[in-house]
Structure formats: C-alpha cells, structure tokens
Image 1: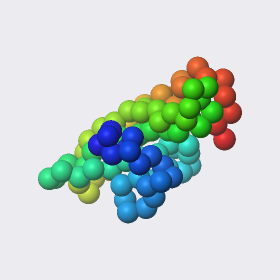
Image 2: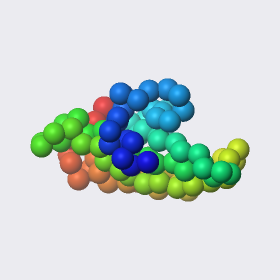
Image 3: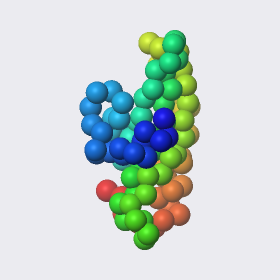
Image 4: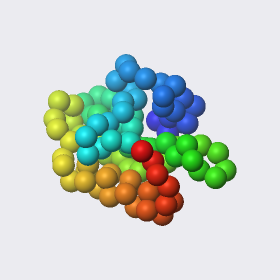
Length: 95
C-alpha cells in the first residue's frame, strides 16, 4: 500500500475510496484504504509541500479494523497527535 501511495500521492489519486482527504479534526490528513478479506486497512498521511528538499509524503500511522465497523477514536486521536508533533517539529504553516 505504501508503494501505491508513493506512486500516486494526493491529489493525483482522488475519489474511488482509496485516497480520501479527511475533514474536521482530521483536516490536513489523507487516508488510504485497502480491503483484504474481512479487514479494512488504513494508512494515514499528510503532504508537506513546504519541505526544504522537495514535497514529502509523511506517513503518520496506520491501523486495521473489521469491515463495516467504526475505527476506534483512540486511533484518530493518535493520528492527530502524530500530525501535531510533525507540524511542531517543522515550524511550518500547513493550512
């Protein structure tokens, strides 16, 4: 899944349920989805277009859950913490 993200990061891949921009408290984070059997695997990432070397795709976290169930809020909280830590370490405005 990481290779697919690398080869076609957002916004090049839009819609279709594979790459989705998140909203609300998760704004600025993209979610990549992959279904295998009865599991839905999710990878959470952000794009740092202001990275000094070149635009960077930053993998924040990932998790899996059974199909047709909600992802635990603890996963989203962890992803937001990783996003906030990255932003703080870069001292860059990502809005």
